[in-house]
Length: 365
Image 1: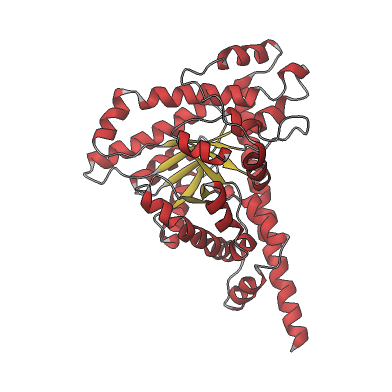
Image 2: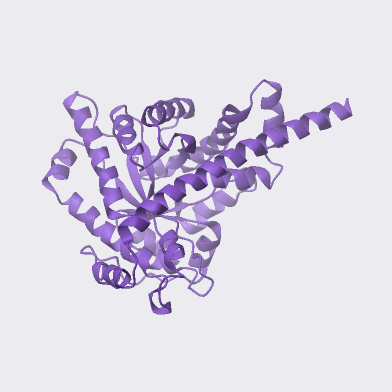
C-alpha cells in the first residue's frame, strides 16, 4: 500500500501546494488525484507568480483579456479563477462523496490587505461570488487585522482558509474567530454549515532558527510547534462549546499543515509529512515532496493528541535562547511581507507579458 493511501486511511487529507495551468492541461493534477490520493490544493501569490512567469500557457488568456480592457489585479484574478475553477471541477467528485469535507481549492485575497480588516471582508465576499464554486476556500491571513475579517466572512457564509498561522496562540485566535462567526449565524437563524481550515506553517520555524541552535536541535522546532498546536486543536474539539455547535450542525474547522517541504538538504525529504500524520487534519505538500513521499515515505506513529514531547523540545529551544513567541510574531509578519512582494512581482509580470504580447501582435499586423 502506498504511503499516501496510508495517510488517507488514517484520516488525513493530502492537498497539493501548487497549481499551474500546465498541470491542468497535461493531466498531472489528474494523475496526482488518481495515483497519490490528492484530494485538494492550495495556491498563493508566489505559486501563481512562478507559474505565469516561467511558462507560456497563460499567454493566450493574457492576450485576450488585455484586448478586452483587463489589466493588473483584475486580469490576474481572471487568470487565477480560470485555473482554480478547473481544479475545483476535478475535485468536485471528492467534495460530493465526502459531503463537502474534502475536495477543496484555495485562493488568497490580495496580500496588500493583510492589515485591512474591512478590505479583506469585501474582497473575500467578492472572490467568493466571482468563483461560484462550493468547494473554493478564500484565504485570509490570521494577522491581527485578519482575525476579525475571518469572523465576518464566516458569518457572511464565505468558506475560509486561514493562512499564515505560526503558533498555538495564532491558531486559537483564528479558531475562535471561526466559532464566533458560526455562533452568530446560529443566533441569526442561518445555516451553521460554513467550512473552514486553519493553516499552520511548519518548516519556516526551522529555517528561522537553524543558525541559532546546536546541530542536535535543528529541524525539531517546527514539529514541536505543530504538536503543541495539535494538542490545542484536539482540546478544542472536546470542549462543550464545540460539541454544542456540532450538535447544531456546524462543520469542523480542520487543522492544516502548511510549509511541509524540507528546506535543509541534510534532513529527510519526507520529514514533516511523516512526523505530522494525524486524523482530521490536512497536509499541503509541494510536488517534489509528494513524489518523494509516494516513493519512499513511511507512516508509523500517529501525532499524539496530548502534544507528546512538544513542551520539552520547546523548553530546550528557550534554553538555547530562542523566544518562540517573538519568533512566531516575526514569522507571520515576514510571511505577509513575502506574499506582498510576490503579489507586486506577479502584477508586474502580467503587465510586462501583456505589453510584450501586444507588441508582438502589432509587429505581425
